[in-house]
Image (cartoon, rainbow, N blue to C red; front, side):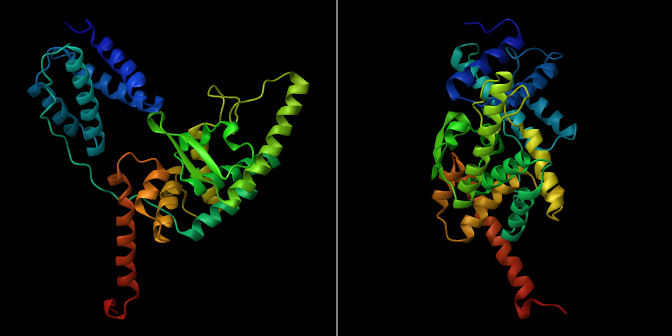
Length: 313
């Protein structure tokens, strides 16, 4: 059967299917949408999704490099196109998939930045004292303790339902990418921080309910914003503030840096790679294996810096 009459409808229907069938997260869908609309705008001068052939789409990918886009961005945009055309082929909108044999740039295996145990300790200490009010400090400390104890993605952390933290749990149920659930253990310091934060949070909500009739929030870290919970952007800013207070270069620290630190420190202390894969929620263990390269690099630096025969002075 023929595909939709408008290219924008191709994108909309594909995104609807990705949300329903793959359980794609909102941020993932937004990224797919941006990539595909960029391709649609480029194709508008050369035809449509329905008639584009391999040569035309390869010209688009080559043009991305000419525009100076990073290899990772080019690879992601090609991946979005491949998924759209695979969907179109499966739906019968096209009799072929023109992206099937198009190869994109190889992504460099850049080692993720991480932190030492001492640096993480400094961040956790900063979180205990950073904030104008008691509630801010308790929340900040709780956020950081959970992040380092579990290695959660930032979206998983800020959108945690408060029900997941009730009852002093030893394990935390996390809803990850693609709607997949996983269990991660909570450290004693994280559980203590949760208990202290919930006591303050619940008292504040009770007071607001009596004074204004405000409804309780379903989120562990509520906010008055549209999402109803602390945003990723605000938490990113908070990490920078804590880094500065801890004496660490803020440019080197993001929420994902703490996730890397969680995995690296586990591996350093003998944790099994498969266990780390499960805790991080990685679908492919190849993604987790990057942390072994971090350790290899650290061992190499250790030899170069500490071995007497490696010295050049």
